[in-house]
Length: 293
Image 1: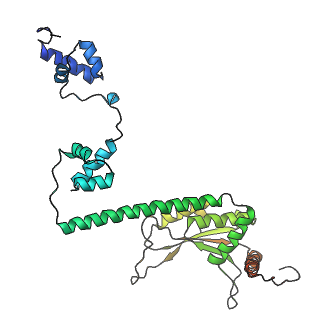
Image 2: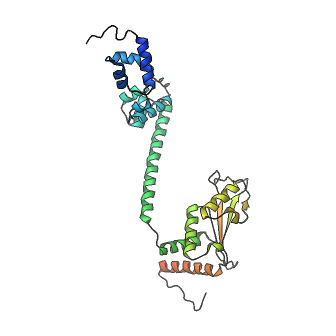
Image 3: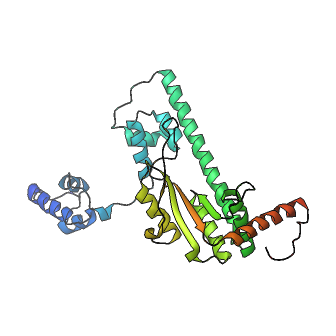
């Protein structure tokens, strides 16, 4: 169909109208209908340099791959390396990165090292994914803990990490020290199960002098659900310059010491419970005692 020569005579005026409509958020179809333009070439020329409004942009499933391909190309990767990394075709890669400069040719030995590193990084990622799956499956096996489950767990936990009476030093104290928040939560749940009142608990942080002591106290206070003002004086551990500490950084919060007041009888019961557990797995009947402990 032939167009009237006068229809697009005022091209610049028409271009201004088209640009104004585009900036107002109209789509190409809306602009075409509004200005009665039936020639796509003319419409392209009228809208040249005018970006489409956001609402007209359709999400592209390959946009993320394209961005990754361009980033890898800028890092100096070849088409083959990008294909291995992203699993897409070379033709797509070529379209996505053809405007980027070609990477400098690397020494074959360096290329081999890079390829080996990529393979190892991939292997580590696969291993980590499998590791997380195994942990998640194991966590799901636990489900809910019955009171007896928590009771036995707490006894074993205390005997592993808590203070113990010695023949050469009679200290029937219930005191527990640990740096693992999960362990602390289980221990406190165990004490609640045993009926130990919150008022009988005393808290103290033990930490190296180079750490953020105030932040550590706030962290542990939040974890156990008390105000930091009730904490006892912090025990500061001096650093030995001859040793290399690995427990450093913002996640280092020292250890929390939890003591129970008026606890001699409780300690004796804990020791008895532990003895009973050991005898139970050994098939031995624990010795009986008459009277109260």
